Length: 97
Image (cartoon, rainbow, N blue to C red; front, side, top):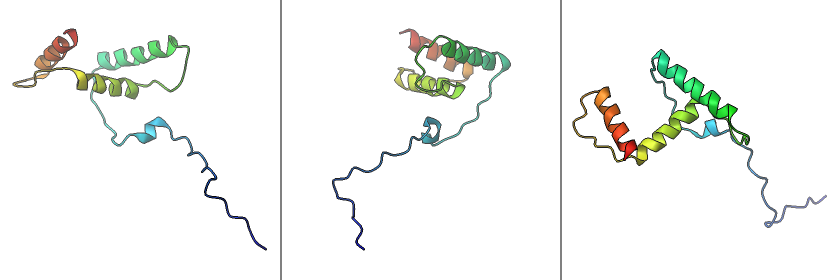
């Protein structure tokens, strides 16, 4: 009995949906003080509460990835940054430009 081979013009099955979190290469742990963590958690809750369209999950990780993307666009003077306070000052100055 002969079986029919699929023709070369037959489209392949669409790839299975891969969750966005599985597309990232690195897992990172960060240290936050209680006030920082509380702020990020409240920020996420407000974003979730104020949206009507829910295309994807918004999580603390989402917020941090977006902040890194924002950081990449800022013209920050990186020479001679002695501490976190100075880094914060320069980042705020770059955002305000």
